[in-house]
Image (cartoon, rainbow over all chains, first blue to last red; front, side, top):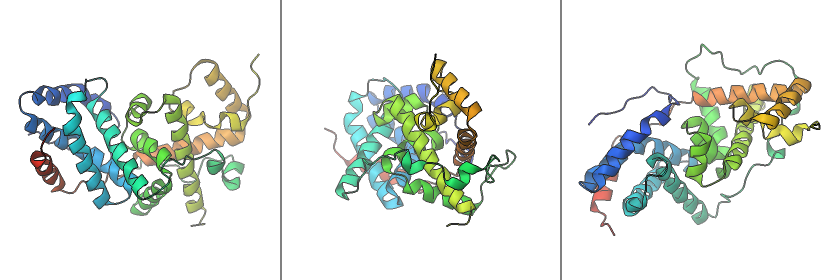
Length: 212
Length: 80
């Protein structure tokens, strides 16, 4: 089996992978269902794991979500008609699994960020200079500390906005694909994404200004 | 004539503008406002810088044996 090895950070042209790989899996369904599921787990397991871990906060919960996702996929695979990509369909199932966990924990998973939640900080709004934390284009990797800060900020975003940020900015889905996976409108996806980015931006400003 | 729109009205459009997802009159409104409003222009720079940082976050690894456990679990679960 060909193992896909990517860089440590994601190349956001992941959209190029889908049609032939999906067709291979769908074609296998009628011939060797077990092999089709194995292939699906190999190909989409890592990205679903990343999504679930960031949505649920822990490796153990992410594993549970993945199990639920692939069991549901096996059960519903006959319903996948090929409209859109298999990846987006799987993200949709995983998203449902995450939401069920929020309900079980009585977590307010449906809370969304408002514009007031993410308004520019007074300090950030007052300076005409580029942000001091703007990445030098030549920098290829983030420091461990900055990575930890970013992951912590992402974990604080309400799930309704966080899911969009993960799919768009971390997993490289388009707005249309994200909207399809999350069963929201494209306009809602754009708004939620902006507010999630602005939330992270505010956390970064606080961090760089030594407030945290 | 298009009326001037406020920072608050246009705030949610900034990321879409950055991502090249605005068109027509909506894009014109945002670009016109950015030329006139240094606060929103700076905000756009910050959002852009944030987006670039997010793209560079390393992807968390999937536990090595998880794929095998998932495959085993799927195999032994009876299909409907």
